[in-house]
Length: 124
Length: 174
Image 1 (spheres, rainbow over the protein chains, first blue to last red):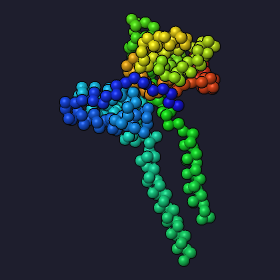
Image 2 (image 1 turned 180 degrees about the vertical axis):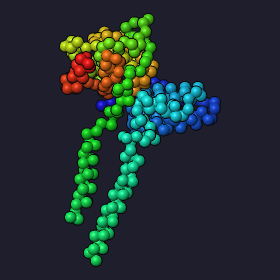
Image 3 (image 1 turned 30 degrees about the horizontal axis):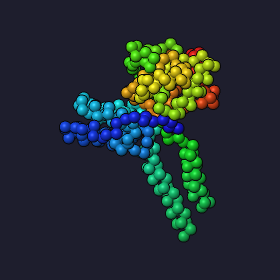
């Protein structure tokens, strides 16, 4: 359904230059933990989609200004594009299965195993 | 009896996979639905001396349509909008997204203009605030300027008849 993507854009990655290594690390960390909505299997860091470049530009400016924390910048993007863009989504109703699903399956598996063992013991 | 559990596992796997066939990963839920339209202050395509803000949404049900002259499916969708515009009394605002002003103006002249006004979002910042990630996109706003619906990708007459028109009529009467 993705119908059109922007064609123009600056394809030079070097525009994100930092004089402070702390800012640089922060920038790299943020763009690696956000997903690109245009090419959903890529992070913002990997993506060259024009929207990803626009977002990286805004994130770059926010990091440079030093007025925003990592959390604030990630939230800025998630507020607009949804928690789907986070590789580390927060715990809420829609994502609860991601957290508790494995335990559910574990309990289920143990239940099945117990039944199976009991069945076998009964036979002997 | 011993086949029951493997059968349940098999059937639920099939069910899960079958259901996921119909999912469209590119259709993301909009964060904006139920919230007021984000504010902006931008020029229009028609008049670069006049500024327009989100106040324009107040008082009528608005169809906010995001398009660009470089977007091929916008052209196809535009034919549908032109047709609907002639048949129905609809209030449309355009957003020209990440585009060239001259090309946008020519596009409207050539393809026809169903928009009350078209907001010129050259930098794509309005698009970013509205969570636009693939044009065309369409938002439906109620009379208070609250986002009620969001559509990613082009609309068609079927969607209009089944979903958009009933929604707009409903919002008009409330």
